Amino acid sequence: MQRATLGPVELAYDTAGDDGTPVLLIMGFAVRGNAWRRQIPALSAQHRVIWFDNRGVGDTVAPRRPVSIRAFADDAAALLDHLGVERAHVVGISMGGMIAQHVAHRHPDRLRSLTLIATHAGGRRAVLPTAQGLRLFLQANFDRRQRGDALLNLLMTPEFLETADRERIKADLAEELGIRSGLARLGQLGAVLSHDMRRHLPRLGQVPTLVIKPDRDVLIHPRNSDHLARRIPGARLVTVPDVGHGLLREHPGHVSDLLLGHFAQVDAQA
Image (cartoon, rainbow, N blue to C red; front, side, top):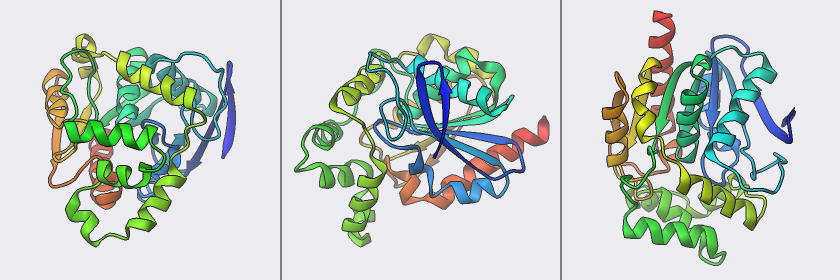
């Protein structure tokens, strides 16, 4: 990966594709930016695609101090500055979707469009995970012995796992997970728990927004996507049926098609 010195942060990032409007992909909790790898080939065939490791993850080096979703968002905007990108299609999944909301709120002039995948607006009224989802999340993050199986069941539907190569997926997930330390994990968790964009959502309507809802997500309750789509003026909600939080893996081509369609519609109106 390449590196950008952004104040106290040495951000690890990479790019693909030279033509077309820029796309910034923001990954979620404890996961490296390369977890977008199933979407990057299709997107980079038509766009300049940028992805990176958040603070505390992978090859990015940052001060060991408390962090907020706002700080993650400012890192993303600073990376666009570093690359000379004036405006980009910004896409975030899970915690990355929370970061993307803050990018849109704090740096609205930097977005061509916004896509929020399997995420929520935060605050006390956010719909909590199912009991199963919470149990699996804790096992995946704080129980090394059960981490592999917990991640599978947290991210994938049982029907997908029936025919999947479970050991191959575990190996892929282990490669994509990149939290640098227990302190970094707790820091990201604290940032997620303090995230609250509810009162700012109406202001995001100035950016063309797509909300993608996996309807069998046990980690981010699907009703949170409904709330985002209702509260962001003009937002378009697309439900992906029979898929869980790991929809980037379960339906990679469908996600790419939804993104490309959204980008094309926005670019045609620019």
